[in-house]
Length: 338
Image 1 (cartoon, rainbow, N blue to C red):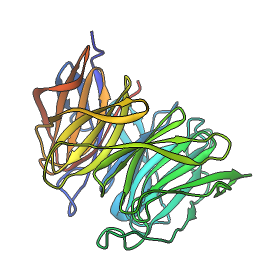
Image 2: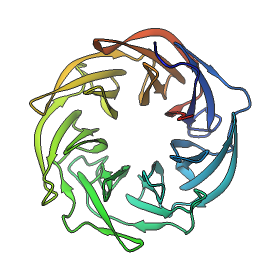
Image 3: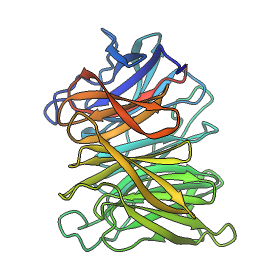
């Protein structure tokens, strides 16, 4: 039986960028997802969220304000306890290191990466260390300059996908300062537009927003070099579609497709991605999704809802449940670890 009664945090765009109300809390019980009244944090356009691995803290990026906001969670209530600039613009992603010593943000607007040292209480102890970048790509209206989109703590590395420059930028710690990795950046096929990646042992799976593909690479442990093993389209849809997010679960890769408005499933065949199937989300523009309790919760930004898909043992392709939670401009879904 799947786990039930799980709390879920939802980030969204607030006016004027969207119609949402900040960070909210919902409860998943079976297929039913219901809002929790009064569980709102006063954060403008919290487009991405991350949890502290041990403490009841939620980190939100206020995208259009370029700020990092820390919220304390007490039951269903969220309270802002810290609010500071990231040093970048259009901050769209946040991640916390597994040892909870560092927090990083990807700043899409100016293509920078910001890193904050965290204290034992989970609070940032310094202002941001900001790493600026240059470069671009062949897609003129999207790659006129660097556009960092996702930060990942990958072993000893801090990496960031640069959609604008077709690179995975890599940093290592030198004392308490992040510096470029001696191995250099990973340079991808021009026009890929890397958005999100997932770590899988010595493999890395990257969704190219502009190329409309998922590509798998093997990392050489000695040199850090990436070798592309294969690539696959993330949807059978014939129109324009932009992959958004990727999750690895049970040996399968799940990808959200905006435009096709589907969640697709891929598997690895000799370490090469292969398309298995897809299902419509029941909404439009699936910006983000999360797997929890045998369900896939999809944040459909433009239809203003979160839809619930269900997974069945033995079948990696989810099926529709018909359940949906109406909520303004959702952009991120984070299940509670409680």
